[in-house]
Image 1: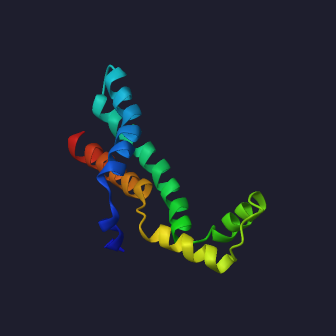
Image 2: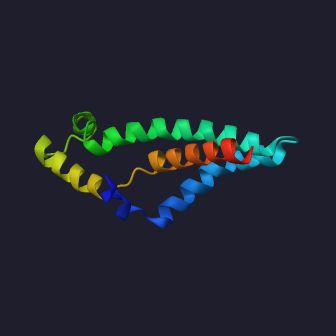
Image 3: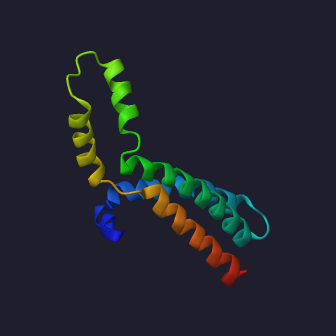
Length: 121
């Protein structure tokens, strides 16, 4: 389970953090009252959305969409001479070096939101 943590790349993680924290920080700065509660609420909502996207990405990492991708690429590229098994092997190599950033950040945001809600408020 934790073997994929070695695949975390900081140059990919930083844009994910900037993009996903831009709106919560904007809401905190623009709110007049109860800034910690607003931060907790927005982080929780973003965490749930990211966890949902992370579950879909987990299905991709397990190879559940390989046949769909193969059929789509075979239909759009008439010069593709690969069989499905060769295509699946190439896809598997790409997926093994991937990390599920949405699921990781979604879980992290939910934990931070719960910490803020129960400890700081």
